[in-house]
Image 1 (cartoon, rainbow, N blue to C red):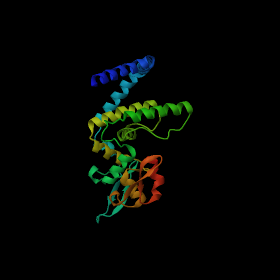
Image 2 (image 1 turned 180 degrees about the vertical axis):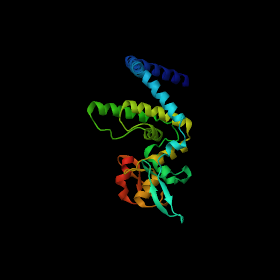
Image 3 (image 1 turned 135 degrees about the vertical axis):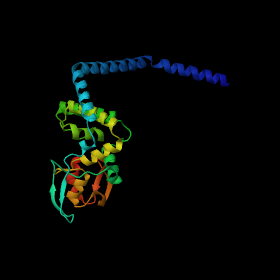
Image 4 (image 1 turned 90 degrees about the horizontal axis):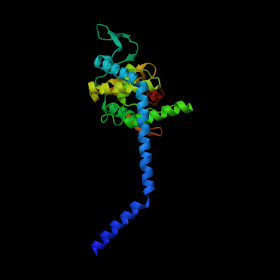
Length: 255
């Protein structure tokens, strides 16, 4: 009886397989066509931009290899002290910034930046392929329909690369070069170092670069003295909310 049932199940399975042979064939052909189109686009892109890609990659490699930790902490704000150790003068570089080492940055600040900017920061190698593809589609769409891009796909490492080496121009070239720089940064520096560099170079508006500079400017106290919390928002799953809401107009420009 069991043998008959097994034979019957196999016969039914074969009938199901033969039921839609044309549909299965059409799906295979469609998949093959899509793969061929992707390959053709990649070949055309390489033929047209191959030399540029090689030049951009080499430039990124050279720049990052020649960088040091000082590259990410230039133009800090300096102070002149009196004999009794009181500040008598404040000298700014080309930007107002105060640098914090990784262990000086509160864990809540680190967590908030990762949650808002790059949830997979400690998992990827500098580039989130899925997010980059989505950003590329949005960029093409914005060019075709003249729409404003409301979100990006850059990881924390890519954003750091853009802040240090590139510009904020929304172009294909900048995006590709940003990827090359991010990959090179991940090869040379640890994740903790990259996060440290990023938090110290983020602009909080009004020429305030880095979390410590923003904290002193908006609250007249150091970052370690602030209380931070996280709440939901429709256009972002998570955002940083300071206990003094007047800072929101400045902080939101970062995200």
